[in-house]
Length: 552
Image (cartoon, rainbow, N blue to C red; front, side, top):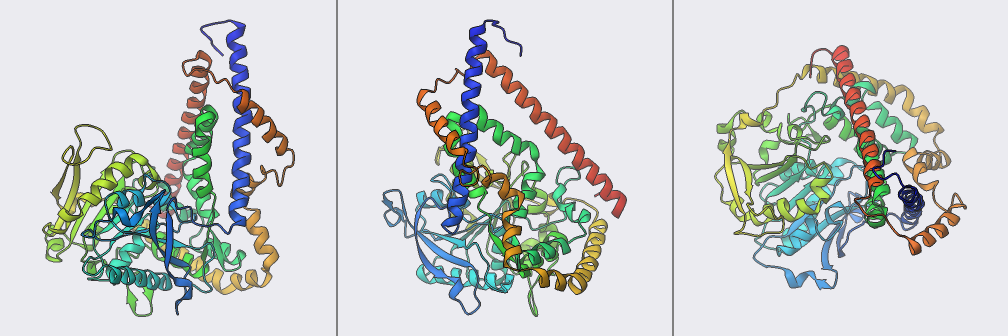
């Protein structure tokens, strides 16, 4: 290590600080493991940072689904009713069911739920439970969501509910909007994929991942091994594999700033490691129709017998929020469906539809939902502009926010919102469809073979013991809970040592030369991981082109 001051005192001080941070780092991982197990013991409850009451429980419906509708009643000591502006429409926030449990939309005070409360809206939140109902289908889920919207509309006559859909919940909101024509108000789609084949070669590798697994059959197999349930831990593992340098940075940041980052890290990880299940029928419908089939934008998504989703039936205004820093749902996938559904701008206007989009240049996928700065700025600007949105002429618009102060907490008139007209052709992202059609054909063949000849045998040999073993031996769980004191008793000694360290902790100043060297090495590791990930993604794109033909 190169130190501008070669004294033994400088080196000794750094060694002490590094040793203390190491103890505190591993103790934080121990606490995360204990939290994971405790969360499981409690039944994986939603991690909302607001008090709520249950309005409807879809598990009691004639077509049961593992969803429930909550009304937010209080934040801290303040009753929500005290802040409500009766002239404003209610807001329904729907969280994504993509591996984790509900709560990311109301994870903290500065969130979508928090901003809606501050703006005077009555806020409802749609949660889901860890276990799907028996033989639950997407049609059952959409039926439950429609009942929720109807219930909220009845509670607020004359004010159509505003729907907030995050990620996976965004396409559910889109399907709901097509089905509930005239019942819902503006729908806000945050990081929501609707055009699954679109994307940039070498930048968005998730869209081609099915080409290397054979398609939907692998999801079917995992659901069979889970006793008819698909473990959300597999989806979360895919997210982490997508950008390994981000995982490294998460732990590196914790190590460097363990004194201040511990509680924030534990709070987020409690949600990140709360893995929920999807039903076999649901995950197969999602994979076959959306991820691989790309059926939604083409109007071929089959909801139930004789019923297909048609996005042209949507009449409520849509607000689409996407980010160029999002490698899971890039703007290509959030916006690329528009020129597929509408031939051109004239066709969009003739349909009487209003679509508004705004983009962020750098925030990542989760940042769209959990970033405090985004919540205080973009989401508040969206909520404050709902009235302007309702009176727009039909067409496509880009929402521009002028904020000369640079302060995310400033309010109108210190910032201004503009709706700039755009042509439908501006969001047409070119890519070759033929390779993806071939992937779909391979997937359909493999799934048919697996379903007919393999699945019955897998189900026959699956029992409650194998189901639980499959769950608890998943690497996303073992890498966490094996550090718990329940599994590793010596972690009690680590916890006691960490208490002593915290009591006597004397952290080094941020400008200490050894800390600068340390951060440089950590940053170098991040760069190496990023370079390796980019090489991997380029190699996958090259192999995809060789297997299925042509550049994507």
